[in-house]
Length: 158
Image 1 (cartoon, helix red, strand yellow):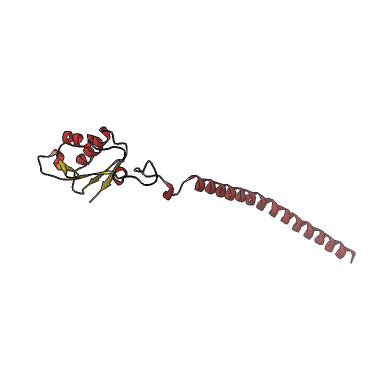
Image 2 (cartoon, helix red, strand yellow):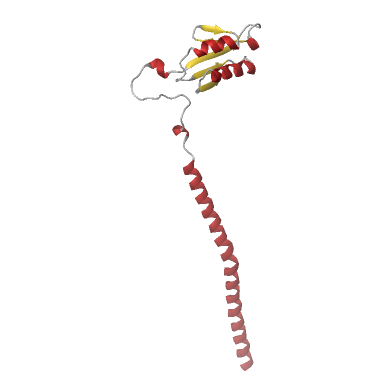
């Protein structure tokens, strides 16, 4: 009888110790990865919060052509000139013609002379047709920059 009580006490003691040791080991192993996971989640949250506040929405981005003053003014002072680059006859430069208003030109020098006489504050919009070569479009863009237009917008297609 005495032996059975001692054996049950030892079993009881070992059983308790075994449970305590298992619980302590489990806490030690799970605690470190859980803390690291929480750190990573918090760092990612902080990163996305900062990255989201630094980028401005597209509706607040400035445009290339803006009015310098607010309120009423002359309508023509606020609108940009429109230069159309269209397919022309073979004798014209790069097979294209440059149309601005009622004036039609076919080479770089005559386009330069026409653009020199225009007001440059409002800018210029270069609208290039689909069937025009890249060289003709580049010519129009370069001549507009050369004569002093600082606000140049490029529009592809008709």
